[in-house]
Length: 315
Image (cartoon, rainbow, N blue to C red; front, side):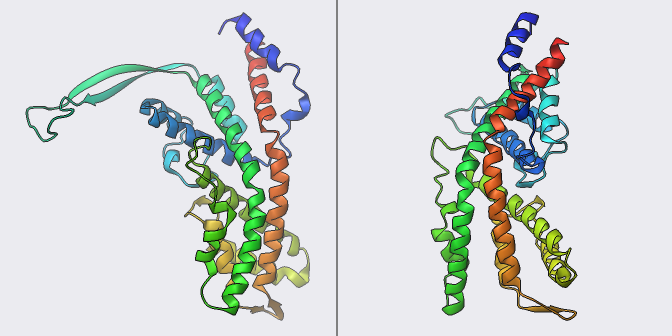
């Protein structure tokens, strides 16, 4: 970029209040998941647009091979801000692509006389443009998450209704809950939704559940009388992990198995799993409310990252 164009771009963000540079309202793990899902979405859209070289380059940037098909949290190897800034600073790169051009389009694919011919072409990768694409996609996902986070509380209400229905009668349970749960009524095929909206929401719940469980376990462990409760909660989290690569509906499975646990006695303490589940669900709802406010700041946060990057360029 020329000096004049960099100065013009810097002028756009130079007056951005310094307050938005802080991401205290948006926890680092939430921001990391947001950027991770944005990168995965960008890879998907590149392939949909018949641009697999760009998708392969992006998923390989920073040693993230395998991220494209990863369904889990904590997939980024570095903090979100560091990842985006590294992408902004990376130089343009021309890569050579080798492909096979099929000659039998519309004809028999098994014809031995119509063998594919190799084709080689060059692709110019502009990492700064990809960084902008990632941030725009992340801003879109953040807006969707702000819409989806209130559904966590609605799902929790239905969870208890279904649980007590199952206790009093037979049937209901998980299958009934899914059929009525607001989180499963999002039209993920609508053209204005991001491609992975359903999966994004699933991972958002998993992260909120993991963090809420840790917060509750740490809080109650400070009381000697409740240390057995904290031990059981941590043991349950260890046996039903919510980090790394996850199955679909991992957060739902975590609560279902916790609620179904029988009363336990550790030492002289009687532990009520239902009461523990209620504490974790309440904490998760509190996190969701705070995250909704933090996600509103994401577009301004990305502007601050661009400003920091441009500041370094004009020094």
